Image (cartoon, rainbow, N blue to C red; front, top):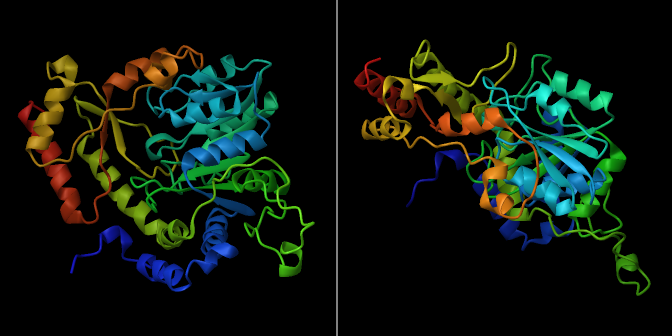
Length: 390
């Protein structure tokens, strides 16, 4: 009998068995999605949570509900995967690329403000690598220019700023991913949080095919039998998309959310161990964590400066792997560098700091389940640093 992966030793199997035993009847009223949404909203201390089938569709539906369309602009960091530009593009809006801070690797509020125009509609903030953006400054800018704020927390479950505010609850809408590499996972899926009832209702209807009886709180699409079987009953109120999370995914996501704090704790232990090891390093400078902020270390990101000592990025990575370390991941190409956007002239905005950082960043894994596994990575890093003379 195969062992269960350590990440799925909670109620995942139990809940999946419940879905199968019911013959998927739970799907009629969204039983597991309802439970997931209720728990997620409770953990984040917000009124509404809505489950989706991915972290990209959450952003698409949210931006549509926030009024984005042709002629509008959505401000998004350049140093983030393409999905943060695709979601605005899907609405007809133009992604405007914002530069990042050289130390935090996160959206630079100064550059953000410089790129606001009369066409600006939404600021799409991304809490990259588990780091938390300076939401105090970003929200000041948003209020000054009367802009809405969408927080992409795909890589930052339960992060907090110095005011103890949880990521995804500071702006107008928060968006998370449950993709397989994320801190919480169900293979693929997403969820949004929202404090405004009208906005939450619109988002749910957009993601739920436009069924008229969907509400901010409920994903239930079936009503009483007499109405449902009446030939005069209207079902669809608006044009929507089939972005709903299925019951199997919801069952796993619910079990993962029940143990969210444990998963984040493990990631933090690995991230803090890397940080301690690199104190004073002449090869790697860790992503800066602002005072009082709670980093959740989706990955441990650091700026590689070993080239100045004659050691290439790739040589350092190869040596690290040879000592038993996991692979070191490069930062994704900037959004406007990707062929899909570059070749089709999608988006605008110069980002010199992000261009420089993208080539320098090293991202180390943080999904280790025990001290024994963490020690393998730390020992590999120590040996690598020693090999190259540190």
